[in-house]
Length: 199
Image (tube, rainbow, N blue to C red; front, side, top):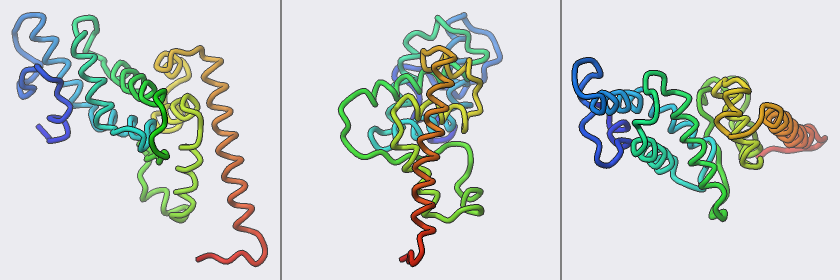
């Protein structure tokens, strides 16, 4: 098992080295399913946490707490299709952290789409501007935009994760895109100004 998966094992959980198949009591089977879910989704959950909280909290701590919370109530859930549940738990924990007083500026690392692909289209300074623009969004705008654009989640799924209505989610995403667009337009207009010198 990789080190990053080991880091996200909840306290008190038995080893996740055993495969899910096989016998065991219902409780033991649930634990094995839970641990397999963590193994399969941990990298993605970390990317989502990093995108939502930026530098205001440790993404690893966010994922760890979300997983620990789920483990404590693991018997309540069906672990055969856990992706949505795990994402929802991580986003909820991230938003809980963001409701606390700000301790630092936010820098967003976007999940999913690699830096290399973006770098082939636009220079590093513009990539940073995009990250800064997303980081400056209100918390729920940023979470909704990340889940929509980078997780490719449907509005209904995002609404479930964020505990909002579908119309509210659509509004958040629309306003987030508009705000990011305005920020980037101002930057691009500034770059096109006559006599503008870089460096």
